[in-house]
Length: 372
Image (cartoon, rainbow, N blue to C red; front, side, top):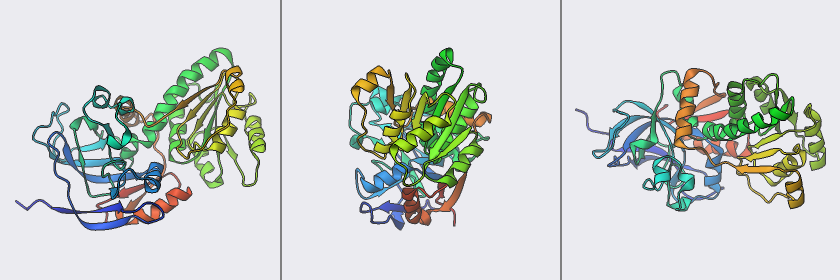
């Protein structure tokens, strides 16, 4: 029997932005966790959260990457294997493991864990992730088998990017039902035609039966080229937010694009001061802002207008393990389309993260660590 490989290639950030990530070719392969598994990483998606970790990492050095799909390489001796996982199985990692001990974390709902994020196990955030040939997962609970009908290249997105969009869309669907009890049309504005925005459009198209007749979905972005992908994904219209436009001009453009004079729901995949401000000023009475993007800022939301407009604002950070399993089943059934992507070699990651930061990647960039 051939000796087990002991070293691997990985891309680590050793210092924060603007220092580039470095390719290491002789990093020691992680040990097999007692209650978990060691995976051979097949594909790792590049998510905008990776840019945030590059700017403000919780720990250094750090191997980025939390959208991981791999094959089971070894299973720990004390692992509770309720799903009968075996070596060679293709699995998606649920990367938000939390403390791994409390009830919320064991159920894949680490957002309710009392411990702060730096004390959580989150792949590519607080512990080494998928920009590597191998990755360790602490418990088998956080692994979900990939059905044969789900492309391995995009399966990793189901653990973060598409999962986060699914969480927001599930909330939007409840609001759609309320609006359509009272109005003939419900307007939805998607801000951002990146990977998450396109995923949200695909999800709405697959999950909302009245999409074509009663639900109007329009996507806004500053990059016109990305908006063509939004149209292909199935949204009804696009809004190009051009350089030099004032906030008032953009609000007017948004309102005039909807049949009812504005959106009832805004899903903001940027999350900046500016996008939140124009969302708030564009919103129909009784509307909702669902904020997903982590760009950051301090939006202006006068309390009087918030209350009299009966607006509600929700924040979304990924989704839970149950939702991820639902999403895997939906994608496997063919009801939900996947978004465009390009596969790249591991050593391309340091350059690609600059493009991710600048917003010039169309669809998603996927790393294949074993691609020569």
